Amino acid sequence: MSFTNFKTTECLSTNAEEIEQLTRTRMAELNALLELKLRSIKKAPEGSLRITQSHNSVQYYHIINKGDNTGTYIPAGHRELAAQLAQKDYDKKVAESTVKEIKFLSKILKDCTQFFKKNTLAEKIFQNLHKNRHALVEPVKLSDEEYAARWQAINYKKDFTPENKNFRTIKDEVVRSKSEILIADTLNRMNIPYHYEFPIKLITEDGTKRTFHPDFLCLNRRTRKEFLWEHFGRMDAPEYATQTVNKLNLFACNGIFPGKNLITTMETSSQPLNTQQVKKLAEEFLV
Image (cartoon, rainbow, N blue to C red; front, side, top):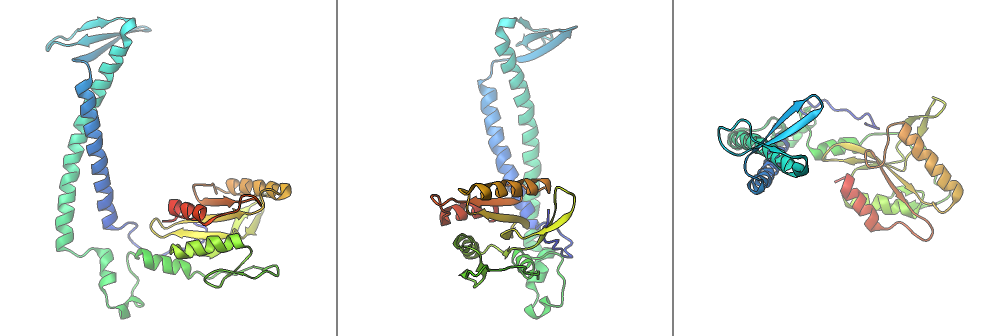
């Protein structure tokens, strides 16, 4: 979900290095999985499991000897043995599939490494151009920094009344509270792009569209995903708390959920917002 409708003419959605890194991550997970399943197979009972069904009755048989297609009946009181054998059979299939995929991905990584050494990737060509050409060329893939810069440069109408207050951020922006200064300055120090009170259109309960101005609209430059950040600063005031619930319900009706595309912070007079809270949330969703 994009709140800005920011679009580029990029032809590539991912970087080649990202695909390589994903492959390496998958390889590491597969190797760990293989080691786990091989240990499980080694500890499992000898033999395999045969299952038959007659009407509503299911019977389990333990096959140990090679060439034995019948096996020994497993009575109801020993169903744990049946479960262990079933798990073993499953683990063996998983291990066989994992070995095949590891071999396949190993070849891909080897080919990728050789290709990257000999060739210039399409998205790197723009970076290698002389800086005087950058303004004249539309790249097939923007760097994270260039994407963030263009996103940050979006112009929007600021419908903001400072309410006779003069809270200023490190970037000399006027905001409404000291807590908003804390959030803005933390985002700025962490080099996270944001817009203050960016207007978004939401559908209200009566079906009409209204413009709202959430506190912050932030960008994760790595994933290029946008997040709203709302700070609720007077949660010990009953009327304000009710308004907060109503706003969160409105967000949910418009597909905006905490942890998905919404970050929330709250405070009361006895539990003020602190920098560590803001930093942890920013690291979790925006870095």
